[in-house]
View 1: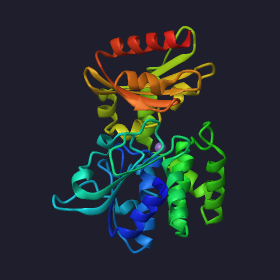
View 2: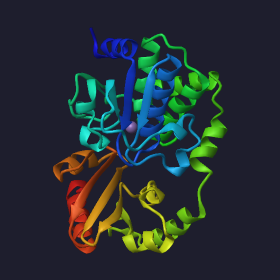
View 3: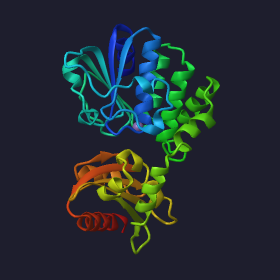
Length: 318
Ligand SMILES: [Mn+2]
């Protein structure tokens, strides 16, 4: 039996489910969590949708988001645990192995960790949401509008609105089918992209003032410091796509976003327009990700970590 068939089997035979995705959930992580949780509930199953960081403001429009929990009772057990879009189980920040009889990893990260009983990983999939679609199709479960909205959002979000090369024929085919299931693209786009809070733009204004472009013009970085978060009075989720701004500069091949975690600790998000494999660089530094999008934590002063990353990238580009 293939991993897909075994996963379908687990969904059919299990009664209680824990569905979780990586911390600091993006559109794919949360929407694929909700796509699966909603579908399981439609099947009459008991599904708990978990995310350690809860639901970011901009994803509250997703059906089922109001039922996401960020803590579990100490004695809560499940027949099946499904960890989504995580890369590594530690990023789900839940003791799923202890709580679940069967543990499934559904993911599209390259080199996703084999931490469970079932390993349904395809790094060619545009989004984990696309894999949930495959699972539900294989299970013969009809896609309802709420589930379609989640799957569409997952794919829209992880392909950068169908701009990245991950927007493969399957991504468009599924998205088309989801629209046929009743998804309104304008409504989802409105939820994802046109519901910003003023604080987000205030934080962005401070962040853009830190823009640094390398002499060669191919590397650009912005930084959000803890002081900026304090000044605006918001948390890290308000900065979650700031890396797209340096990336949008003409000629930039690698965009960097430094988010300060502590005086000498930074979370670095990297985006590559193609040539440089930022996933490989991130893994080398103890982080993870894809060829075009990756992240890692770095220790040192802002000046030191920036100089280090700029010079590493400069040698990769030359
Ligand atoms: Mn994803």
